[in-house]
Image 1 (spheres, helix red, strand yellow):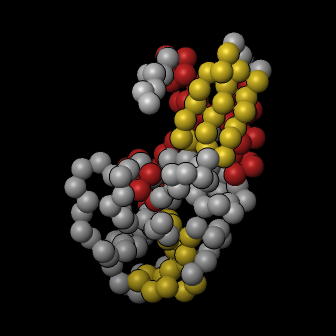
Image 2 (cartoon, rainbow, N blue to C red):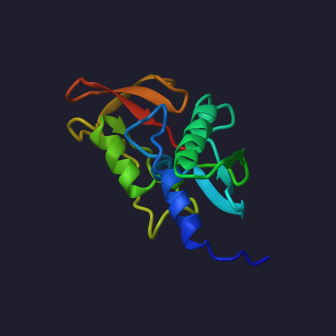
Length: 169
């Protein structure tokens, strides 16, 4: 089935929906996180947004949907439906290069590319997990879970600073 190219209005509204900060990781937007999967105009003043959570039980999905509805309604769209889409599943490869940069800059080690379809170009073979504070690759796992289920708590063996690591999926 061939789908039509998005209209300029759909593109603008998708950018607007994607500009919403992630409620659990406000340093990245939903677009940078790769969870806004699609947006369609259903008619005058009616929009449907497809949202794929980072994992099925993500408690932030309701907040994401509410924030998307709020920004699109503020832009003059009275009827906004946010639909959760679980297939294809979200993977950490959906995080943009800018999102990865922002995570590292804020002290969260970004996930390593897993080689999924969302990567652009060759996948670097660097299995080392780098400390976002000093860049050392000697780190230790402190806990499989951190402030959210999608992150692990690690400590750098060089600078001794703890940091979150966004787990690969």
